[in-house]
Length: 118
Image (cartoon, rainbow, N blue to C red; front, side):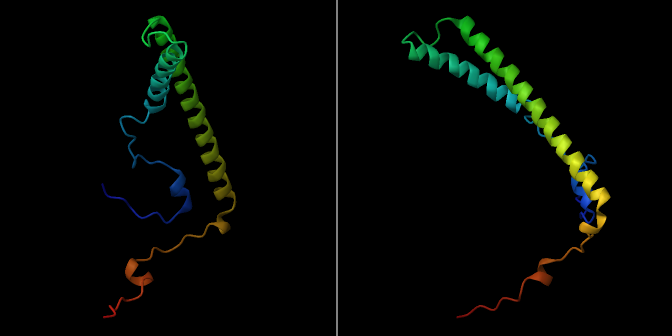
């Protein structure tokens, strides 16, 4: 993957298809909350001193509620991040003087030469 240098601050807030989401990215939160809901049902049974897998309908219901909650929170998070990026992009468009384009520096220009002391 060839990554071009980012000189313009607006390029940081736009995704032009350079970054691909991982396989687990869209399902991570719902899957995690589903497992947590199932685990909560096991914990409730353990707390009431019942066999941990008794009442399988409770396990299914808790897992479904957990998956729904995970999906809801994932959507709310995406909504919040999109709104935040839109606000930042708009601010940068209105105030370009606060975000000058900087030249890229190489490590050789920034670091001092190293001389070993023996």
